[in-house]
Image (tube, rainbow over all chains, first blue to last red; front, side, top):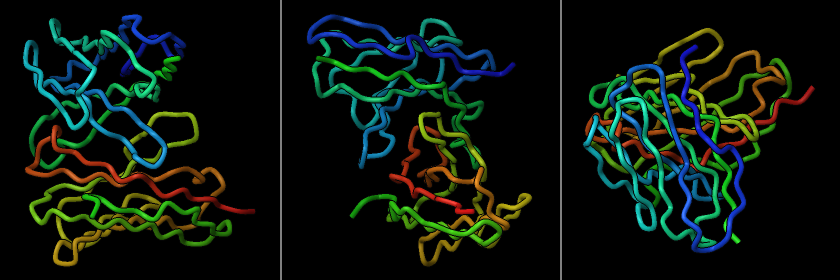
Length: 116
Length: 112
């Protein structure tokens, strides 16, 4: 089954405790991206990757890191989480980075993060 | 002005009626337009995309694009209670996935 898998799905942590949210896709997609979703603000892009070892900042990258060492995996790292990073996070992938269908994203189930 | 604007709703329509969801965008260079459906507590899923002016139909769904007026709409015919969800409009600038901007969504309620 084609899917994007995120872990953990739910996490409560404390300020400053490093955490990693994993994302893995089995569709051989080149493009992967992380979004956060907050009430009234919608989905905002954090980081994206066009291919292995190619990553770039999205609209709200502060406080986050990513890496793309393998095509299927795109982990999101919070080195020192703060309460303003409490949010619902989605990983997404797309077979196309460019072209008319470039926004056709497949989303993971989401990771709800609470930072106390 | 937000790059992609949607009325947050809720938009309430009776079962069997046509639901009309609208979205306006600010960047005239936008190339592709997407409608995602998001059920409460779930992830968004793509239901329609359009990149040429006019209408595009897929089952009960019709996407309409008017680039001159910078709006895109989604019509849902014969609305069902299972259509109750938040509908997100997304706009791709420069034809790249990295430049996909989402609206905040319109919540649709289909009443019995």
